[in-house]
Image (spheres, rainbow, N blue to C red):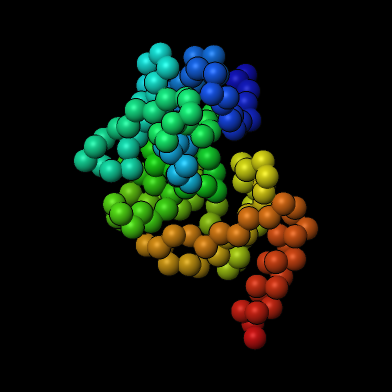
Length: 167
């Protein structure tokens, strides 16, 4: 029976290499101080080839180091609740620079749709692992997501939003 390993976020030091971190195709990378996660296509020595934000470019090359285009962080699987672009160009958000409305996937595979306006769920973030999402926000725009450090804070915020909605 196969066991699933948890999603890990790895912040490399400037002396690390993709090989020493075990980076492989299918992982996601965040680079150049961008908040978007890009799927890793291949690893070449000290370089990682990943999906480019611009569909005409196809892919980008990034490295670990102390330069502008260097890697900020790796994720071992698709980062749920965060902005990502996969190798097939599907995205978790509306990209105003490269709008591809038919490629937006707001919910992950296996997620069930809820009739509730505001939904609380766990994210993969270490610092703020709880999310409140407005599930009725416009699909063609960025999702409305609020991040919290504890479930109690997220529930209190959701209660306040529901009360505000009712008034």
